[in-house]
Image (cartoon, rainbow, N blue to C red; front, side):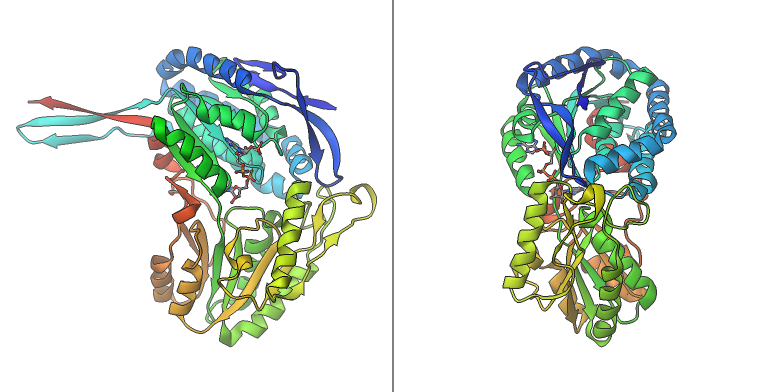
Length: 480
Ligand code: NDP
């Protein structure tokens, strides 16, 4: 049984209380490791280590910071297979998905920000014959990074890499539900010689350890990805002390399919959009709107594809769908399936648990589920389920579907499927969403701004947006 330890001041440590939390393998429903159950005392230790490391890290040359981040990326690539297996075991996601998406993209995050920081220009604004202004961008100091369980290492590194590249020291907490790859990252940081205290990883419950990070007066900024309710709670703590905040929150993303789409390709892609990672990606499109003239054909083709998805042991490369991340979340997703039925939803496929034979018979598996006949304003179509449950609904006009798409409290991502270029531009402009994909989904260029509008968040990550967030701008004005 592995002990998942904190990484504080370069050392691997249990919680000072010596308390532990069980860590489950979702595919078996069994405890397979234990996690340091950290509290405010451990966070304090991490903050003091980060504060002590900050002056030297801030002065470390950009080239050296970039070298260390690249070395971490190299190690992540080198250990891709082992990390993918660890991620799959901890999260329940298919190992092939972790191998091809989660771990390579985590490595890419470190490599991208290693390069980005060496290429980040400072601004200068000349006032001819009067003055010249230039902008200094200093690291903030000690910053907090808190990430969720759905893409554990991928989203953890998406925050840590820009924070470190910009010269900050970090106190980070992965989700207590999926802590394993953050622990393995700590080992990699020790191997590459990241100076002690520059990155500190504290494990434990959000309500205890996470809350202590958010409330700590010497942590000057919080980058958080997680649920909207948790984001609201964090904002309440941070606002009165003017802490800088980046909040990447929930979504209820629309997928808009017009009759002129490439039907075969779109059916395949829409299935991926709805059910990748068991629907547990904040960018998944769980509300599928299809133009009425192709509705029946599209629905039948999609239903057949979804029905054919193989659910089972995430370690088996033949399975397309793995387990739901936790018992708590499994129960929540099942409760939404019941709600959809009560709201009059017609079940097209799925709607039940799956019991694979063998080692996974007690795991938390749900068949990918598709409903039709649900009104756009019902709870099933308004609330984030964050699981393998999607709805499909016909529409008659562009205005109508834009209304449906925009008709939730969220605004993270949307996808539009059409071969009409003018329509693609028009609809993309009309959607209230931080990201719009046209004829694609999850295609990512790390230079682009990433984030949501409305209750999907505040601020943007990615490229220079992240570097701006993790620095304070100072204008220097020199009179000529
Ligand atoms: P939570 O909001 O429950 O948790 C996110 C993180 O915050 C976890 O590390 C959690 O710790 C921690 N946390 C919980 N309570 C507190 C607190 N009071 N103070 C500080 N930290 C706290 O989200 P989930 O982990 O359930 O993730 C799913 C959610 O994340 C979905 O809503 C999804 O849409 C959203 N998400 C958004 C993305 C985006 O980019 N917009 C990307 C991915 C997911 P612990 O787990 O230990 O409780």
